[in-house]
Length: 293
Image (cartoon, rainbow, N blue to C red; front, side, top):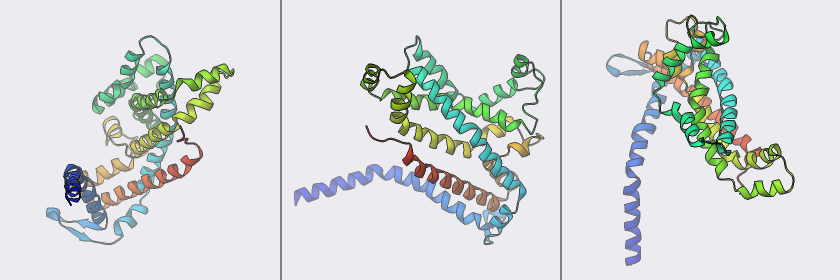
């Protein structure tokens, strides 16, 4: 009986320990998401009241050319940033794992963009991409309007996004590479395997779980891009139509136009898009991710 009583007490203490996290999750995540779903079927009125209007917000959204352009911009941004960014991060992680002098300093330098305020990063890069006196045009002797040209702006924002996330992704991949036992490489060297063969048959399979996590994180971050576009492009920029993402469109509709029902529908579409792409990745990862030790 005493044993059962002690077990019940342990359960109570366990629930008390996880209660703050569960309450925070419900208050900060679950309830706002449910509220967003309700608002996506509603029209906002004065003093925070709303009126149920059915699927009208979704009908307006799917018939909007601006919405589809924002969806395309978001997907294009993912295509430009995720594959290149993850590949560069893997290369940097391999270099940081090699026997080079001062690699601890290099790790800190590569990770530095993650601790710098996004506003500062955007302002510095905006100055560098200035068409008149920017460093980029000066070095390469070009006259490209990096910030105002609609055909170039998405590439400009993608470059900054890749640079900003490179160090963080490299550190994550570096941790995965360092967990690989050196005995695998020693045995491969004794068998005459080249460095490329060691990378292909040892490093890639063993680091693939970490690589998959980095891929998921980077994809979600790219689909939710907002801050770089807000700080680098601006509402009055003629290139905004080619750079506006779904989250930026949500911000404009919700906080500028005050159309929160329509903005909520955009959020639900973005969440659905993230869910579909993530599900595809989880299905596809069975073919290339190796969880065996």
